[in-house]
Image 1 (cartoon, rainbow, N blue to C red):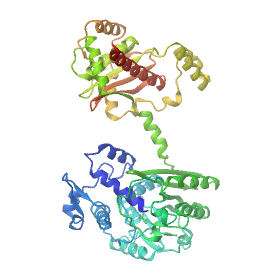
Image 2 (cartoon, helix red, strand yellow; image 1 turned 90 degrees about the horizontal axis):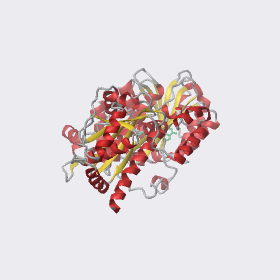
Image 3 (cartoon, rainbow, N blue to C red; image 1 turned 180 degrees about the vertical axis):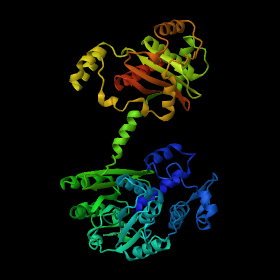
Image 4 (cartoon, protein in one colour; image 1 turned 45 degrees about the horizontal axis):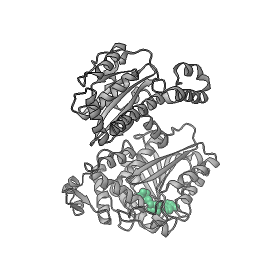
Length: 542
Ligand code: SAH
């Protein structure tokens, strides 16, 4: 619980350093739920401080003039949570310093995932929050955002009193009912009076730590982890449960095996990744038909959530690993040419007659030369400033030779025996599984736009370098074969090659358009890299 608060807050602080560390923010944003309002818009501390005097007290200006909050002060953490709930959700809450102080962005991630599970953000839905805490944050968010009804359970007297008050002072008593339950049970007691109602979901932030040592981080995943950047705010029942979260969630699973279809979805947040596999195994052993999970990455560490259902007709959101694999399939292939290599290649290109002064121009010229030698059709296409783009069309695989080609053929024949005819013909076999994700519609938007622009034959080849001498001859050959790679009919591969800057290095990236299989692009990418690096090595020894 403690570390969850820490991570969530760490991530918010990372967010405030937006312009300084865009990469961190981007990776953080990617792992936030797409509907999370803080995904692309981290809290603006300066603005909030100007509007809320009680928050202003906890905001300082650092040396670079940025508004910052000290997350090691529980008062500051509490002030931020209360301020965000007020500003962004119109909620006024009170929380004692000695109980867990929830962090809003992470709680929102879980709420949005529950929306995905029950496939409905706006309809009246019924949920249970097991261990609602003093804040009663999930029911308050779910009720105010989506009009959900909640049964909120709690064992701790202080938490129960605060939660009840927080519901009342936000006039949400019609939607949220807080109940005190005995420690030993989870769902059974809360539901024993209401035998008829079917709940759409239950959610839970279980007490995370098995014992005091774990609570102090002694037994945590990574002993070298940096010290907590926010304070441990949490009472004994909040951060500890006998047997840790694993046992706590197993008890929920046990209850669910009796309650079965009384709830459409059962769900739980997990503080440790290692809890996920044994819990999934438990669900499998018990024959639970629908199981899924997700992950919420917050700054440097993560949280997981598990959900299961006894209904056959529920929509099961895919776990993130599958989505990530898809993302990877869409990513361009790329390699970097370090600054020194770029300098060498400039010299090389000049020797070949390239008069362009820009380093990217020189590299593009060398790439074009190699492509011409490979008889791969290519033409320059409009692109962003400071970049070069080539649309490539290969009519055959000319970059894998002899023994390597036969080895490749054998490999593909082994993998896809029934497609051997086309493999023999094209030296490569279409891999259906791969092609599934390789359609151009999955390219990023601006890439897609550019691909559409070059799809027809209406884009002129942009002469980059004034080519004289040896370069002339090769360009000539290429343009005689076909001047319009975009319109070639029988091809094995089409891709878009970009040459771009990354600080003083150059990066060549290749984006899939269409073709027989993505391995071809992989091989061509390797071939280009080796050719360019060989050229550097040669000029080094000359
Ligand atoms: N949901 C809140 C609080 C989570 S802390 C949040 O996300 O911020 C876990 C809470 O579960 C604590 O408030 C603790 O008192 C409560 N709890 C522990 N065992 C419980 C049980 N058996 N039934 C209900 N609540 C329990």
